[in-house]
Image 1: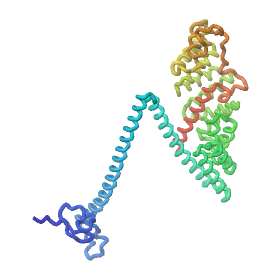
Image 2 (image 1 turned 120 degrees about the vertical axis):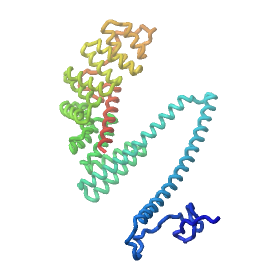
Image 3 (image 1 turned 30 degrees about the vertical axis):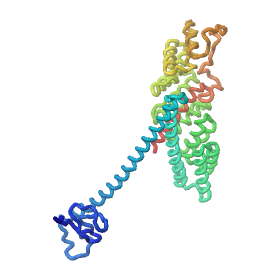
Length: 409
């Protein structure tokens, strides 16, 4: 029995049976209608019926869906192949690890931890590379939009910016920043460039250089919360108290509370011996970021105020959150000595690894630590205070800086 003829091929006009998807003669995909009536200059084509119009729409949609289905099918096939290869590779690696573990060559738990850290580090580095490339384009776009550079200067500026970011990507950070500094001399009102250079020096604890570029960025964009936070901390480190308080207060008010902002203000109030306001700021810093450092700071302040019970409470919380916090154990021993609890003081020092319990040659009363809030010209917020607190302060400020930067874009 001969099959029913459905339609003819639109290309070679060969007859094809019902249900045939491709032409048996030329291989063309069969369609219901391949050319709408409106495109044919025939008499009577203006009177297009509704059925013909719907068939034209169905035909066009059929073609698009078929092409999409083909692409999805090919993509799925590739994904299945990659998944299969990845499964075989992982199985081979796990077998090798088990074999080496049986021979005592590797430690599986440590290897897994190192691998996880490496993957996380690579992901972070890739994210930073993408962010730097976006920032480079933003710097160049702002230079073009400002129109302050003549053509030769614009060309030199673009070359320096491109070379600087390329060197930074190649891990030649010092040379790259030098290139960007030269570019900043050409366009000193480029806020994005000055902010990037200032953030670089802030990260490395070079507050004087950070102050220069962050100051330029603030002059061009005084309402930028990111600039206010970083510049406020550098001003506090350089002893510019009033300007630092204004900048940090503005950053906390407009950009939201941060550990760095409240800690910086607390430090400035300590320098003025305004203990009540300093205590309030340090408490806010603890609320924003509960951490061993925040508890340690409050313990130090209560120690200065001779409120030993509260000092012990916060110092014990700090050591509980981080059993390796030597400074907190040291100060906790100091508080115990002052309150006459020598045995507890010895236990605190033993946990800190400072004294040997069997060695009584060093009297515990001679173990003294420099007060954190000793007010002097050499004790600065970041560069002259506790190193761990300084690192925590920079880390939090840069984290807030990054979050604000992402929201801005």
